[in-house]
Image 1 (tube, rainbow, N blue to C red):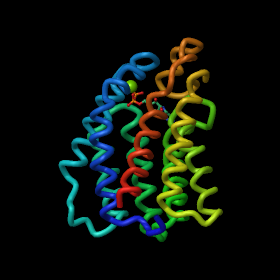
Image 2 (cartoon, rainbow, N blue to C red):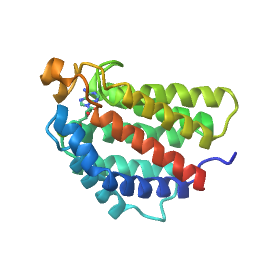
Image 3 (cartoon, rainbow, N blue to C red):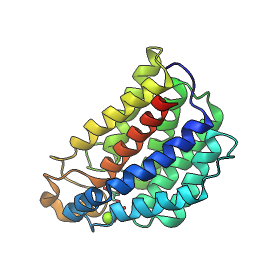
Image 4 (cartoon, rainbow, N blue to C red):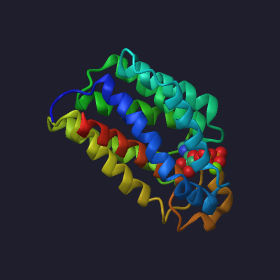
Length: 211
Ligand code: ADP
Ligand code: MG
């Protein structure tokens, strides 16, 4: 698949993300129960249901879809993840408005999302947060873009890398966010936010492959 991503892709992605998050709500709750306060699955489910309720099939472009997602997540998702994902989608929206939606555009969106998360949360890699999923996702997308791959290939590589990144949080000691209060007891559990990031990127790749 060599075509660029379209507005239909963005709409299908967010609709698919809502379904996947609803299906994995309990898993995200259980992960957050282990090292946080147990609300991550609920937060994400509430946020994406609100997003889908507002999604307008007449959205003019990818950027405006992502901007709506950002604003809705900011206002409906509590906790740390609402502002983090809100900022990520807002920055990604800006990148989408400034780039062609090819593999380089995918890398630019992921770079912008990661920058937004870091600007908000001040975490670096290895602190057991969603940064540990976004960072390898960016490297993977950039690698596909540099090799001349498609937007779809970049998204799939990013999704796979984010999944591996989320799994790699298991042995980490949390030093940011609520999980850091647990100290050593945070070790041995997968980070919920890194898990939802991998899920979001996987649904983005699914929607691109179906486009
Ligand atoms: P809360 O921690 O307020 O209950 P959520 O449970 O919705 O919020 O989200 C928790 C997730 O947010 C964590 O698993 C982690 O991935 C992410 N997170 C928390 N703090 C930070 C931070 N400072 N930087 C990046 N990600 C963070
Ligand atoms: Mg929580």
